[in-house]
Structures are given as C-alpha cells and as structure tokens.
Image (cartoon, rainbow, N blue to C red; front, side):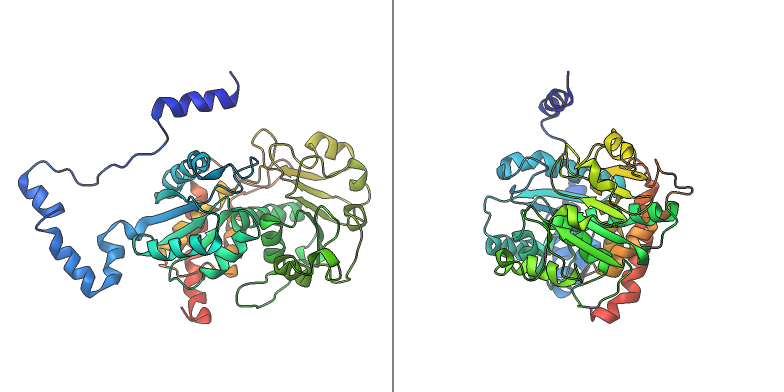
Amino acid sequence: MDIYKRALKLHKKYKGKLEIFPKIKVKTKDDLSLVYTPGVAGVSRAIAKNPNLARSLTIKGNSVAIVSDGSAVLGLGNIGPYAAIPVMEGKALLFKEYAGIDAFPITVATQESYEIINLIKNIVPVFSGINLEDISAPRCFEIEDALQDIGIPVFHDDQHGTAIVLLAALINASKLADKKLTDLKVVISGAGAAGTAIANLLLCVGHDKSICEPVREVIACDSVGIVNRTRPDIQNNPWKMRLAGITNRRDMSGSLADAMNHADVFIGVSKGGALKGSLIKKMNEKPIIFAMANPIPEIMPDEAMKHGAFIVGTGRSDFPNQVNNVLAFPGVFLGALQARAKIITNGMKIGAAFALAACVDKPTVDNILPSPLDKKVPKAIARVVSETYRKEKTLYGV
C-alpha cells in the first residue's frame, strides 16, 4: 500500500488528526460553578477591565490560528478550503507536538484578500499569533503586509519558514565549502512567495526598510527568465518590481542559464526538472544546490552530484539535507508567544536561522540540518527569537 492510500486509511480511522481536551475536569457542581456560571463572570469582569489579562486567564496566551484559503496547497494548487483542512490539521498537530502550542485550522471560503484581512482582524481577540498558510502569490504578500499592525505576529510560513530553514542550511553548507556568506553569488529559481522571502532574508530587507547585505549577490529567475527592473512584463506587478529592486544589482537579463555563470549557490523553489546538470558545471568551485520543488526537485540529487555538486538539499525526507518548514515554525511561534511579540522581525528570523544551524554540532555534506523529529530544536530557536524580540522591540516602537 503506497503512502497516499495509507494516509487516507489513517485519516478515515480517526476522522482527522485533532480533538479538544479540557484542562479541568468537571466532576462536581462546585467545579461547574468555577469553570462556567456563576464563577466565570468574575474572570470576564477582570478581563473587561484589563484585556491584557486574556493572555493569562484564557487560551489566548498559547493559541495560534492557521489560516488558509486553499489556493496554493502543497504541490496540488488551488484545491479550495475543504481540501486544505487535512494539511492545516497536520500543521496544528506539529505545533502541539513540537512546541506545545494550541493551534486551530481555519480554512476560509473566500479568496478575496480584503475579506481574509478583515476576518483575521476580527478573530484577533482569541489568538496570540496568526500563521498564514498555502495562500497563493501575490495575495499572500498583500494579506501579510496589511496585518502587521494588528498587535500579534503574522507569519506566512510558506515564505518565511522556508527562508529561515534555507538560510540555516546555507550557513552550514557555506562553512563546509569554506566560503563566506558575504562572498556568495546566489541564484534563485522561482519568484513567488518562497523565492521572494528567501531573497529578502538573504539581503536582510525588512518591513522597516533597513538594509544589511550578508550575501554578495542574489539573482532571481521566474518562468520568463532573470527578474530585472526593465522587463516590460513585470512593470505592473509591484511585488516582482520590489524583488527586482533588491536583487540583480548589475541589471542582468537573460535566462536561468545566464544567471548560473559563476554562481556559488542554486536555490530552487519552482518546478521539477528546472535545473539541468550541465548548468552546475557553469558554477564556481564546490557548488551548493538546494532543489526544493516537491514532490519532484528541480534536479535529482544523484544527477546533481554526477555533475559536480558539492552539497545537495531537497524538500524530501527520503534524501539527505531535507529543508523542511517544521524545523522553523514551532520554535519561531513559541519564542514569539513567550515574548508576547506584536510582530516577527527580520532579526528574529535571522536569529532563528543561526540557532537552527547551531543545532548541528558537526555538519557534514549529508547532514547540514537537524532531523525534523528533533524536539530540542524548537526550544533552541524559541530562546533566540524571544531574546531578539526583547532587544529589538524598542527599535520597532512596539
């Protein structure tokens, strides 16, 4: 029986992966009086006087909403909110399993950005964090940008979770290749949500518009070719123009093949088979390949190694160096909730990446990231994320 049939059988048996358990057992009338009427009125009065008490007196302090419209689910595309439920359930399970966070799958029957924005603004009272998930570009950018002032962190995991884990992988891979981040030329195949977030993080461009450049050069490519400011087809696309504005400093034009000349790193967040082995030969010594398209990578690891790749990572668990978001989001949210963060800053993301990279004591070419099953990782990330926010919050005026 293949993995898909086994998963279907498992979900049918349990009718999903989540259920709600009470923390308090109601065995007597006194118990009932305390958890519900009349005793609960005292709790409500206290919160009415000081809404901040909701974090310590209710589920709010440890709760995250996982919000999706089902428009970009895994590699399945726009399959809608009902079909998105099992994926969001799985995410909620991982939140609980790895970070002890109570997360709720909320799939919405609209793909209008303004409706999703308004919905999220109106459910803020019961949550301390919002995890946007599987929302297609460019709406994912619009929605996240519009929610940065709602008083709790909003984090689109397809963008930033991917970027954090990728940066961690790159930190350890570059050490093994004896290269500095500041010397790297990076080519990204894919200019959607993940590709844009990776470029932003590698170039440290944040919501505050501060700029710090740990990577020497980033060139992004989409299905047309190299993203640059003079391309007529992106002039009316503000998100790609923003990407063009921070990447490709020499204003190159051409194809992925042109971009790959003397590159140190290839990052694939596009489609299977997008990278030909011959292009690896055009890269600098000890080329690093992250081919993360699922389920078929941009190039298969054995093919990449045959053409001279030094390190290869993919999004798959059946190959070495799996770049998996589960390594990031539980720890990032745990740290944000512990610090009562109002936003997630670039500093928090970068701190998370370095903390994740440090979880591997002795990296090797086949082991640059910890196992997704390592439950020590979220705590290590959370500690750095929380500390970073406390240091940065005055800078952001929150």
